[in-house]
Length: 265
Image (cartoon, rainbow, N blue to C red):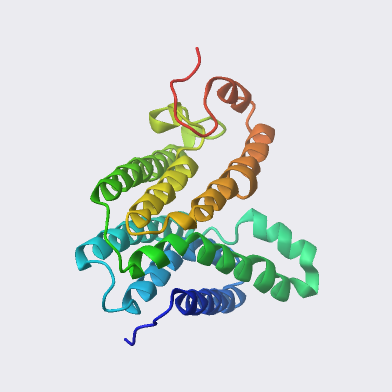
């Protein structure tokens, strides 16, 4: 594939790729009548952008080994997340959030869906992936201590996210747990191990990318963390759980909302 010289041009092409990819997902959502397909693509979208940034990088960019580490980390995370969400939601139809949005949107829903769901997620995906853009296209030296620190942070995040998803899937599979609150395993230390893990993964990727000069992309992991805490993650889910599970208030009292720590007595 031909290289793209300037970082600005690569960023513009990356944005176009994100919009194009999510538009294809939107077409699939119209066919399936399921806007939640966009969530299943979320992790894979970062893999697509990362592959594009690497494939179009200048020949003089950082060593193959460094780029393989950075891309490998995002690929493992993104493919696992998309595969898990696809498996978890298979046969369950459209997520309740999108059903509510569909009802409010009425005849205008397909276009509202395109702009406020798919293109908005494409924009966020592109912005959060900026550390990958800089890291995978860097031409400068690489700080290996930062790489290993980033890998360690990523590993902690990946463990919490993957273990949290696995524990929750097993918990929900047991009919005896209906209406109960999961408070064992990593869920004992944080009410949202998957969201904490997601944030830690991106801080780890940012550190790995910063090892090759991506320090100025700090806003990307900050935005990801704020989204998980205030918009689509913790805040949205907490409201629903407090309303539907009486035991959840006690769980909230003794368990950290985000950062893992020992539970209160």
